[in-house]
Amino acid sequence: MATKKKIPSSSVDKPDSSPAALKPIPAFPKKELNKWLKTHKAWDHDDWLQLLDDLKTKGYSDLVNNQEGQDSVGLYLETNRKN
Image (tube, rainbow, N blue to C red):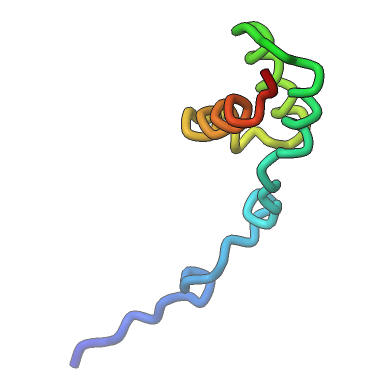
């Protein structure tokens, strides 16, 4: 007769309760980007890098630390810039 292995309850599919998993994902930073656009009618690469750093300090690291997130910020800026 084969014995059944008992799976410890701690390894059963439970949601991750680590502090990082409980941290809410911030919404897309429209308010910050609109404010930035008011003071930047045009920008260069250094301005772009400074904006990304500023967004990181405001809690948007998950957004701006990857190319897809940076592309979405850039698209928002280009779409909403006033000429």
